[in-house]
Length: 100
Image 1 (tube, rainbow, N blue to C red):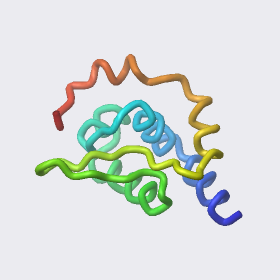
Image 2 (cartoon, helix red, strand yellow; image 1 turned 135 degrees about the vertical axis):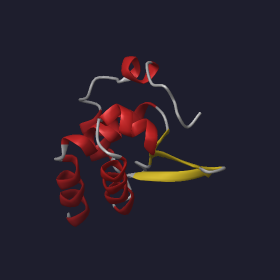
Image 3 (spheres, rainbow, N blue to C red; image 1 turned 120 degrees about the vertical axis):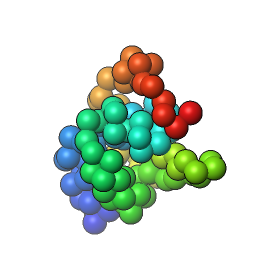
Image 4 (cartoon, rainbow, N blue to C red; image 1 turned 90 degrees about the horizontal axis):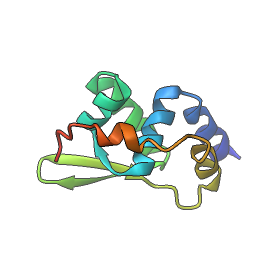
């Protein structure tokens, strides 16, 4: 029950919810998320830190870049909430991709 309420609290923030929606489509670096969400780099990093601590995102390093992706194993309640958000493919297609 604690994990569920913690996840719901995290998902109550629009910025974190949108970060997860973008990561549902593909893995992204912080600079990509800054452009997509419209927050500062420290702001996005703080949100990612909270999502990572809750086990909702994971990171992988490629050279100097760190990429984030969803980590939703055994978290069907989060998947259900994210399925209510329309796909973000159009917005992602316009992304400049500074980490690519």
